[in-house]
Length: 77
Image (tube, rainbow, N blue to C red; front, side, top):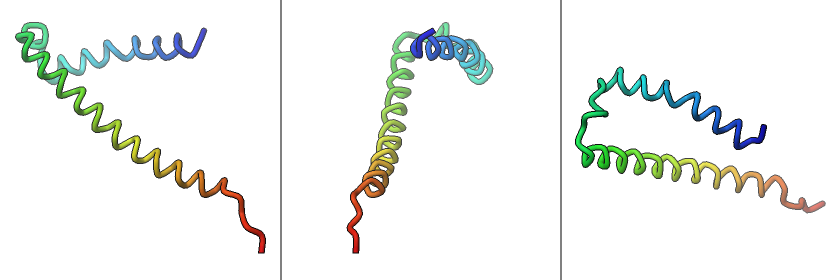
């Protein structure tokens, strides 16, 4: 089994739990909401993903700086 297969299996396993949690929180209205509302919801979710991605990118950039400093050749006195 490849890494992609393992990751895809994990995603597929988690999906029903997410749908169930959404149904509990919002009811089963998602299946009857107008498509325009679902588009708005999806756009908001993608904005959240981009925002969280930026936060993670900034953290990784700081981490990269720390790694670069650790790997920099040290001057001998």
